[in-house]
Image (tube, rainbow, N blue to C red; front, side, top):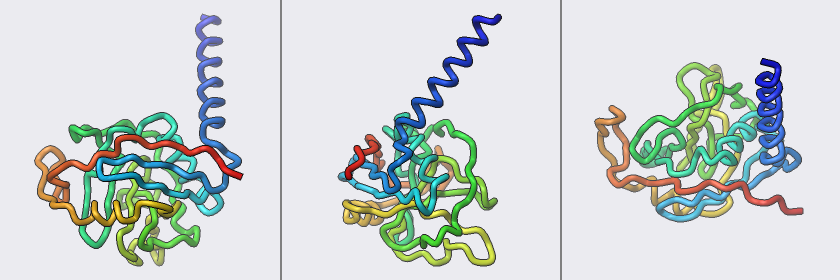
Length: 195
């Protein structure tokens, strides 16, 4: 029993240590490369304004959890959303929900990346979206908004093209606005920090 407890403790510690090293905690503006079936997108995250959200997103990136997922919701002139489903529209595992950092001063403007959530404020976990127009209605006011945690450095034209794909009702998901031709997030990679 003691051996099992020791092994469990070591595994927990090594997992925690690896997570903190991989997430690059000293980099205030980490860059993530998203290789998609429509092209490459580079996003710069803002750990200064959204530390909880950035760490959460990077956890999914460095563990490979975003690889081979789909952008499952595309609403023209609004958003492109992904991160939650595999290419067969199976739900991916989620970590704990995170605190909503929508009051950080970053706005849901064109070219930004934000966390999706349910109607309750602190329900974001792994799904994210790109704003393909200025969406002031998603910012906080008298209600919690959607937390912006970075912006697109390169590939805004790719996101614009995603926003124009044909969509329809998807029976598997039971939703409208699902691309008829799946848009795949092939791989998400945390780029090395530059000085």
